[in-house]
Amino acid sequence: MGPLHHVNLVWMAEALALVFFLIALNIRGMRESSLLNEVLGAIDILTESTIIVFGFLFAWRPELLAHQWVTQFPTFKEFAYGSSLAIISFVGLESISQAAQETKRPATVVPRTSVGLIFTVFIFATAFSTMSLGVLPWQDIAKAVGDPVATLAHAIPFIGIIAGPFAALLGATILLISANSGVMSASRLTFAMSQFNFISDWFNAVHPRYRTPYRTILVFSGIGILQLVLSFLTPNAMDTLGNMYAFGATTGYILVFIALIKLRFTDPYAPRPYKVPLNIKINYRGRVVEFPILGVIGTLGISTILFEVILTHAIGRIAGPAWIILCFLYYAYYRRSKGYPIFGNIPRDWEAQQIKVLEAAEEYDLLEEYKQALAERERLEAKAHAK
Image (tube, rainbow, N blue to C red; front, side, top):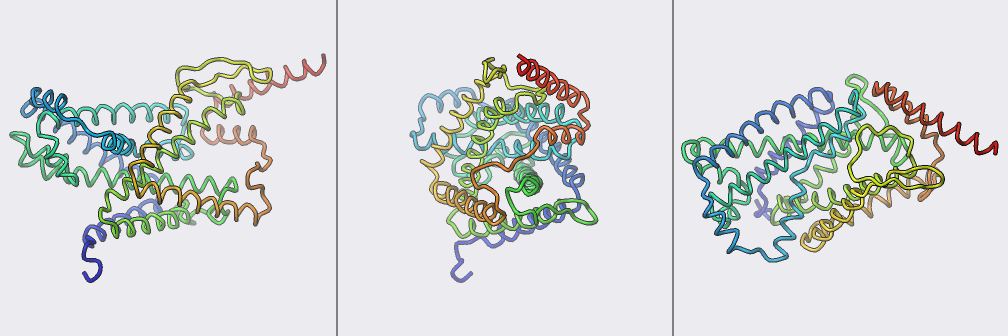
């Protein structure tokens, strides 16, 4: 259409329609949003399991897998590009923690759900990769970059004629779940940021009827719509969006690992019913701190993936840092306009905040454990002061 002859307007219209649907759904409430994810997620897992079982039983050839494994080697650039995109498989992992504020007993639910998601994604990703290289030449899968699972399912005897089109529908529903999780988690995260003076308190408002953070849903979904439209103006919208997500996810996970390490030193008394393994007890300012070795390993590993993203993803290399700089400029302007320090902290009673969080989450056992830890700290401090 005119100068937009290379733009798939039908796909863009479908994507925009789905985003508007998700905006309305999330404004209506988290229960409705979560129900959509639960129903579609159950259908997707059942369908994926069926494709994997039938594929290994009736189409998988171990000799083809061995041949491709031995004779076909990607270049370093191809390996770096593919491995950096693999992080997209875990889209939704961050949504679990970002929705924890509206979860009852999150100390039990969040770790259990996170570990379950990690292993589920690992199993399915490994199974599909292993099966695909034993069913089709990798060149056939590479040609079907838009619908590789549908192409793979179509090659399976007995179910291929049905599984192929159904797998394409499966891909659409999985992306719908991911987009829904993104809208839900981004709105909750930015709502919390407004409460702690990282962004304008204008976002700290809920819908008068549905009690959802509708302003953050509208504004940040609007930013997503802008990114969506701009990506369709590039030669490959899916590649562009994948590049941007790979940069954003790796940057976010690095910050999570840094926060994990820092909080072990600055907030050692907070109850931690689940801890990552590989911790070393060290003395820090007169108290014992459990230093997370896995946090260091994770930081180095994700930093390597971020390096791969910057090295192999042109859009991510440009748009990612530009987005961070733009957001920091807004943050600096807002903090300066309110008289808050840009690089410093606003004095807060974080222990009182922690107590309020545990009370709201109905984590009464952890609340009692936290109060006892604070009381023991005060007793030791008073004893040291008396000496």
